[in-house]
Image (cartoon, rainbow, N blue to C red; front, side, top):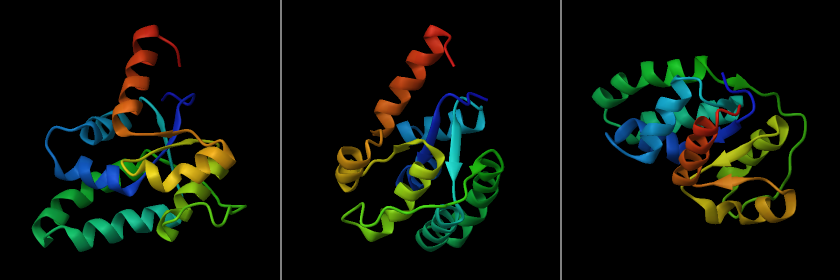
Length: 146
């Protein structure tokens, strides 16, 4: 596993990765399963993954996605939240993503960059779109660095 690349993957990326056949988020989930980066999650983020997927997917699609999500989570580092930074996003539902990233010392991968502008500016968090993160992983892989 590439411990040098620690990331918190926002729910929107997990959702798209599990529901679209070919997309940057799909490739990110593949990289997660292949151990190309260290995904970090908290209990709150895990609960959000489950809540969003179980609500937005049909029962049939959720039953197919659930084992994949379980496998992804089995390969993630669970991070305890010792400190919180509030408010850190205009969307209160994103606060726990920032908390996870700050406590894990990890960057955030999200399709919703606008909600993390404050966290980027004030907390110096690295916020990447799925495409930017894939580019970063590709460059690291090609250079052979960890």
